[in-house]
Image 1 (tube, rainbow, N blue to C red):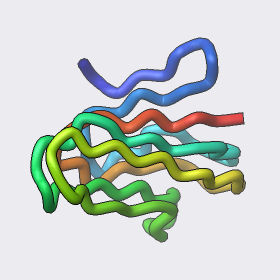
Image 2 (image 1 turned 90 degrees about the vertical axis):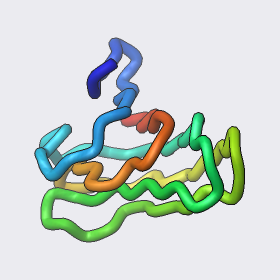
Image 3 (image 1 turned 180 degrees about the vertical axis):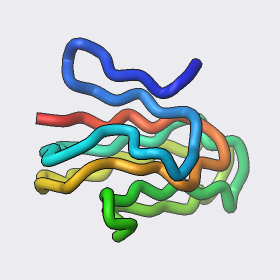
Length: 91
């Protein structure tokens, strides 16, 4: 799967990189990370300017994390995703 946006306004991300995934302004409601396979796996979401919006480190296999963000941002970049999938809900 490649990074994609569904009709419900959710970005489904599984490919890290420095490319702008979604240009802003964008209102990020929630970030959910599923499918990390090992403790120490990392994920990071940044805004267009490179400032960190959210970052996490998995504590074990089958790690799941939900984070309520509810903020406007200039865009979305995901420079780090070791394993798993990020669901980024927008409003």
